[in-house]
Image (cartoon, rainbow, N blue to C red; front, side, top):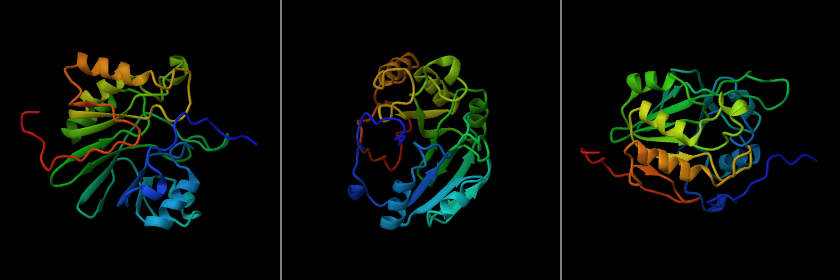
Length: 231
C-alpha cells in the first residue's frame, strides 16, 4: 500500500500531551495539512473550533467535524479573536481528479493585544505587499521555509527561505517564525537546509535571532502581553 511521504521527525508534541486548542485553522486540503486521523483525534479529545476554506467543510463533516468555511477576505470571530481569511499562492488537491476544487489561504488573527499572520503554504508573489498594506502591520508572521526544490516545479507553490523573509517583510511583520520544514520529505532539498538559509536571509534584512525565530521541533514560546514599542 502507498504510505505517502516519509516523516523525518516524529511529532514534536504527542497528541495526548497537546494543550487544548481553542481554534484549529486549516489552510488547505493537502495530506500533510489535513490528516484525517489527527483531525478525528483532535475533535474527540478537545472539540475545538475549526475554521477552513471554501469547499472543505463538507469533507470535515464526514469526520464528524462542524467547521466554519470562509472565502478569501471573509472573517469570523472565535472568542476574543477576529480571524480573516487572506490569499496565498498555492493549490489544492487530494486526488488526481479534484485539483483546485477547494480553496487554499493564509489567515490573519487579531486580538486586543496581538496581530498574527499564518501564511499556510505559499509561493512568493506581489499579493503580500498588498496584504501588508491593507492588513498590517503584524506583530508576528508564521512563514513557510521548506519544500522549494527543484525551483522550476516548486516556485509557484512554495517559497524559498529567502522569499519567506521577503514575504514577512512585505506583510510588515515585526517578528518571523519559520515553519513548514524538517518534518516530511516532500521535495529535493535536504530537510534541514532551510533554517540556515532563513536565518542568513533574515540577518541580511536586519532581523536577528530575537526577531526571526527558528524554533525547535515541539518548542513553545509564550507571546508577551504587549510587544515592546521599539521593535
